[in-house]
Length: 401
View 1 (cartoon, rainbow, N blue to C red):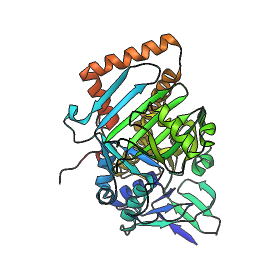
View 2 (cartoon, rainbow, N blue to C red):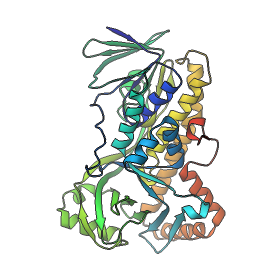
View 3 (cartoon, rainbow, N blue to C red):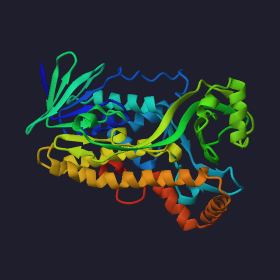
View 4 (spheres, rainbow, N blue to C red):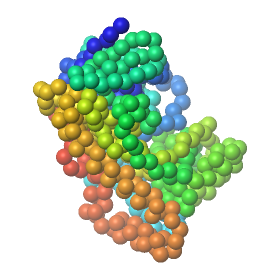
């Protein structure tokens, strides 16, 4: 059986579904092929998921313009309006506040699964977007006119363009023969939900440690979601709950008092990846299929959403074949350099702050102190992190209603 669409998206995670919604708004016939199950409906009684993201202002605008943010706001989001960055190797720190910019907040902490579900519901409401789950792709081919995907059950999907939104082990990227530059950070990121003696109070904390980075992300109920990137993650995962809470409190210098409760823990290895190309004729990569970075600034999903916005813009601005390399190169030029710069910047911060050489320790302490006192520079850094600096694609800008 042959299924014909304008565009096929492999991967029904956050970025894949966001692109499907955006292309659906353009009137294109879109198929989303997902290996996993359909995202589960929101359950208000379910505990907060371990995997959360810090959604910046540009990504919030994109989700709002797609019609997903309204659902998320009704379900569960956790705004934060302050951020403190501290260096465990000294007394230096820097603080950011939304009030300094006249903004209501710096961003929101949102569960991955809720973003995926909200986008799924938007896509399902669009008659020209079809969802297929439990999919196993056995072959991806491209000819002069079409991209052709063959599934294990014999079904065939043809389209003018196939977009790989299928994560860091992208099947589309592999089929296209696109090389990837990789860098192993020799760390794992431990994620968990914790309760401390003092509530998180809408403040995000980040502490640079000799072996990694520890982030406490505020949740609306006063708890925190932690992301602990560490070289000794396996040792920390092996601790019982009480010993882990003690180690976590010590690493955080007990800024919020004792850690009194903690959820189950999960961990994933940290490897930076960047595809040498984002596009080929009839093929494009977005999100983790194109790039993964260190999570120390929480920019991974925000970069992916900007990929979505730029690719959607490149396609809406042309009457050409959407699989044309000329069209797709516009997207690649808009995103590849910026993503590479952010990756290198995060790697530079990581190397600078986990290096305990005395001169570097003094230098970074001085840098934090000076930056904290220079209002214009700090404001620029804040706006860049919020995704409000520079020329944004239309889908990532707030629209007047």
